[in-house]
Image 1 (tube, one colour):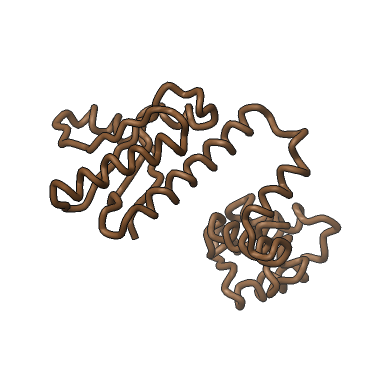
Image 2 (spheres, rainbow, N blue to C red):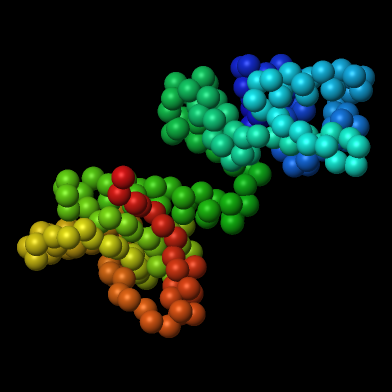
Length: 222
């Protein structure tokens, strides 16, 4: 399914939106040249006017011609299209959608792609686990530290995983229950030792930035 799939758009309108998302900005002539079996120039202009009325496209004048661009971010359109695909063809089950995609494309997936899928699943497991910690005791934030994400596709063989966690204000006994309970659950989930590290103020700005860039968020309290 095209990421621009929208029941309110015709086939031609969806094709034009696809061109605009690929080109970011384009004139009528450029859009027409990129369309399969292109309609007339005036027909493309008419379709762009309709898309503008529907709120999908805007334009501005440049060098005595109109340049068109999409109004909705591509990532948002992609998420919307994917959600509709899952709801329409897989009864709202993300698991069924993933299984179907893997069944149809396993032979074309590389080892790196399979590792990335495994990491995404592992991160999702960790996020769900953290979010189910006793109410009021779950960390406010959690992130994988350093190169830990590179190990997720290979657990339980990974030597250890480091999680940066930030807990809300808790009593000493509550904090201990939350800390060690979460550590045990994560070790059971990933099948390897887990270290929970709480962030401390880092004065060196370069080191602080390096730590920030090397961590990958997996959970944030709502």
